[in-house]
Image (tube, rainbow, N blue to C red):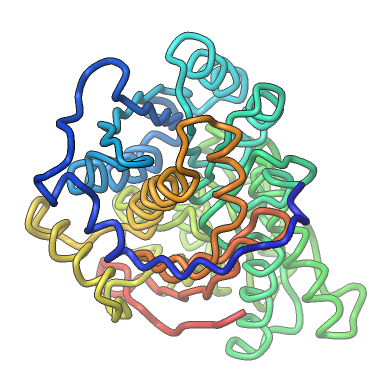
Length: 389
């Protein structure tokens, strides 16, 4: 189904600005039959709660600015139904099931954490309810699933970007991997880094070791003592922000000076709060940078966000904003509130200008987008460079 011919639909955000909510002439929305429900399943408690909260923040802002959508001349109120997946795979699957069975949502957004998204994937597929991932980068989220899409880049690209950074910028010839083995995102991203690092260095032994931990661990002394004896040129540690910050903090205390690099999950205030001065200089890939937000859509998003929160948004907040708008755009183009019709419209999304770049979905339902490298500098996340696909 995803191989169906695509229709070029250059739909800038400005098109959404023309929705009847601002026109003032459409039928007033709000009756039970005039409501479209968008389900959101995110970790609001548990180990990944900070990440989930940031994505929800972007979704809520988009809903506040664009609370209705016109479908075939009729104005519908868009209602968010937000479910806590508790940072757990089983609870994630249960949350998706409830959104479909009890809340009768037409579209689902989420989730922070590829594991949670993968857990909900079979459920949306069986129920024929379209889902849009926001920052879930593991390839398995959309693989073989015609009902799951995403507005972020995927791990083969992200892993290659960070591996090339290690080789080109850090001049690394050897590396050690520290992976959160209970997290599909971490394991998947590590694999793509390793594959490219070995190929680029031409050394099948360039990865000196891969050490594991599980979500929630706090003592990494055994793994780090082993790493210290190997003296790698770089350490790639794609994992949850809290555990990653603790790994770096404890590594520095043991005298390990090798640079740490990671993935998009590091971009939370908690990463710096926990890691403090120890995470200075840590470099990671991200989806968005306020310093590089040049489009009118990005400028509008930043203006509205800063007015409400008096700070810059996280990258995943921009993705939450974009995911909601991609859903609204698809509903409008579908001309129907039927989930199957909405699914088909999402699949044809091309050239959609969002806050975090332009979204064009490929045959797998994945977005091809640029990566932003950021560094922890002076206790803040600072833009370093942009890398295009």
